Length: 137
Image (tube, rainbow, N blue to C red; front, side, top):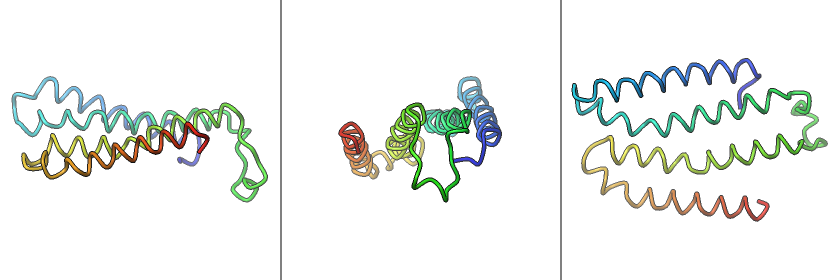
């Protein structure tokens, strides 16, 4: 998690700019090179990363309910903070699937086969984490 609201927002803005550039490049210059065309598979990864930054900014936006690390043992989260943290966890659970999916499609042709099992394992782990979160982790 970033150090403050301003840091979270700064990262989110810079990541949004990178995402916008990559989306523009993939849609307007895909005919130039197969490498540029394959970069579109990384867009979901960047969307997930931007999502994390924006959720962290929302958590920091009401920073009065955040306590120092030394006092965290004795504190409880607000309902809003707990809800945002659960959304954050869902994004984090599925990031390995997004990364492997992008590697399977944007990398070497043999990666589709080589990374099929790791992608299946990442999906199984994501489902397990979602079930655990639903059961009250």
